[in-house]
Structures are given as structure tokens and as C-alpha cells.
Length: 74
Image (tube, one colour):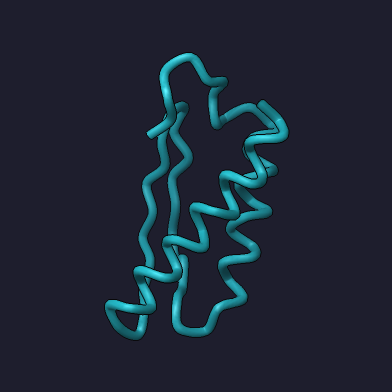
């Protein structure tokens, strides 16, 4: 969930930035992002992983990529 007062995730530039982050997450073999729903102030994700460590590391990496993509925009 985004902090109150930030722009919507459905804005074209934000949507493109999140898509870039998702593309990077797809490169990991032990973590798979299968479906997502982009809401105005949060995301819904369905992901698969080989084990608990892979899901934890995959989500951490994905969130870092999203933050790095969105922070310069905002």
C-alpha cells in the first residue's frame, strides 16, 4: 500500500515503472510472478516459488525494484 498523498499507480508513467520492475523479477528462476492487479494505491500479486526462502527473497527483490523505479518519478 502506498503512503497517503502519493500519485496513483494507474498513471501511465507509474504503470510503466512497475512493469519494468516485474520484468526484472521474471528473470529469477526460483521465483515466478504469475498474476498481478494494479490498483490506485496498492498491488495484488500472485507469485510462486520453489521454497520459503525463494518467495521471501523474490518479494524483497521485487519491492526494491518497484521502489527504485517509482522514487525518481515522484
